[in-house]
Length: 489
Image (cartoon, rainbow, N blue to C red; front, side):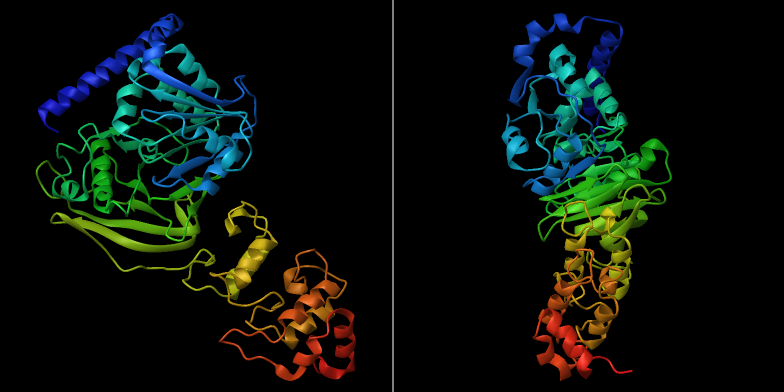
């Protein structure tokens, strides 16, 4: 970092630390509010102005910027439990208020409040600090993250944000708001930095990092970045990883790169789901050894970085730092002022639950055994149920079969008819003939079997002998089986 940049940064830190020491020493901040409140922040309210009390879940929302992902924001509302949602930002106005209050879905908040910081004085304002302290959920909007560090670093706002996360309350951010959530963060004091600049010189003038600003669950020892692929930020992420290890004296570090119009919702247990449109993706990186070359004015040399791409609908376990479904894996490295990625090691859609690169009966069996576990949620409602099983069977990333294929061989045929007949009126699960998900094996399941009888995927061969028989639904189907068209002894 150039001397002038160090001086500017040190001045900012000194100002913020003085404000924090004053707060700790017992300065009456409420007395300042009438003087600075009107100039230092803007406040917007939608909903009730009274302080709500609600039971929250400690989820984390990581949004990559661009278009918001409605399903992810609805999940954020669910975590807030109907309490007060607070949006913090350094520019803009109340654009999230109506959207979160009654447009996006999820549990409707008691209120959505937005505070726009116009300068650092707001970080010592009693009204602002009270709103942060009492919010059930806090969302950091986009903009310029340098403003957040200028206004919040070393102030009571930083202390309250960390207390909020530690209390098991939901927190999230998009774009610049995402960039400050990692335990290390690109501060952008001197403007943005490109991949080329980081790879050519990880200590260039624009490469300003902060360490230890926030302590958000599952993001310790990690740095976050937004607009990841759209703005070609893979190379600069490698530089961020190398710099963080060098600055902190660590042997490994992690990175989370989230693409535009993509969000990751991390549940309290650490299970994260990638949400968004068909092009949604997130990259989870881990450098397992320090850079072999990292010095001012020199190109970066960094090897053996594990890079896991999780696509729309896929899951990643942030607690174990391991992919669950819908992912591919590469090895990334940097050398000579550039970076490279090895070929994918594993590639599978969200339904590839065993991670072997194929979607087959084993994946369906895992899902059937795990119904109720959010890890098997395919439709994004956080409840793995029969709707998700239908997507597993016949959805775009599924087995390519149809309900009624009880033995999961890709065909609805006499073998499946026999499964249903043997279990009629008995034990109910999909594997025993429950084709409708109503926890019963009955005439409705015969009708479903009749509807799909004769279907076969390209890899299977139909049994045409009884196609006309299965056109007769319900009880007539059962009678016809008794007349000799069923499986033979």
